[in-house]
Amino acid sequence: MKIVARSAILALSLVTFACGDDDDKKDGQTIDEIPEQLAGTYTSPCLPNTVLSLSHSTRELRFSKLGDFDKKEVYYSDNCASAPALVYKVSGTAQHKGSSPDNPELDLINFSVKNAYITIGTQATVDALNALSFCGKKDWALDVETSVADANCSGFTIKKGEVIEDVYDDRDGTLFFGKKFALLLSGDGERPT
Image (tube, rainbow, N blue to C red; front, top):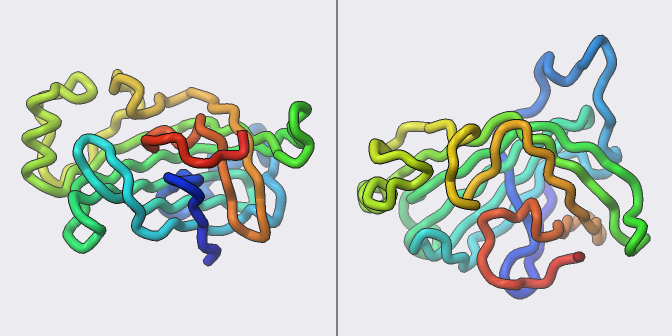
């Protein structure tokens, strides 16, 4: 497992579970593969991050060799000592698009979203999201994974079918992403953009 570092606020996004199903193939061909060195799991430690009055988060991002990605962001109301207050998962495919024409030291990557889910782990977060009509919903429930792939979540989540064009920098096994895929991050931490 590779450890994802953080400068200033946070430099990485995360992901979900296992990769690889029959969706990896389109008309009998594999999708654009990501570079071999990116395949694997990247994690961040528990770091301060304010989202929806939650104070800390961890992130995990997994790439398969065929280009699937899973991203999981886990948010806590403390320094990650208690149960997660909210879990945000996104999955889809990622395509390496070569070097950035603006900065050849950076590589371009596209994330194509297939699914996005939120699971709430504390009653206080359920009550807060219901009071806000978060994502247009007033019936959030405890420990229920809810698809938000087609919901309007006011910039909080991404939608099914979206393609997020971003950059990354692989610095000795530590991935730094641009701001576009780090959707839930607050603050202006150092990014390779």
